Image (cartoon, rainbow, N blue to C red; front, side, top):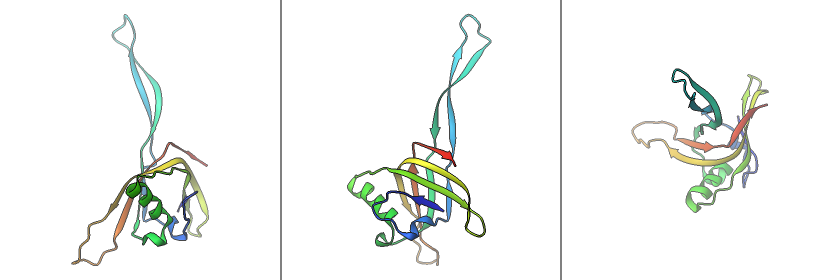
Length: 138
């Protein structure tokens, strides 16, 4: 389940996703050679970077999805309104939360629709790529 806080319009359908990926954090580092001693290179942490999160779900009509409306505002009107909080929640078989990641300062980066093929009976999938400043496990 993914919960979006402060969407322009909140809809019940905006919490269900086929898949969620990209919850990755990496420590950036600088390599520093020790003066006068060429055998040693020190690696020091210099920052943290977060990969974008990738969400996949069946396509919804814009009027049925506040998330779709938020993306349209960004990509069609170039009006980016960051969401302060987005929660990615793992649920058990009774739909009780067992693990939660809290993402902050979230903006859309990419919006992709799967291939349209009239010869196959497949669900049309939309892929949303969102960038966030950081996350913490709560």
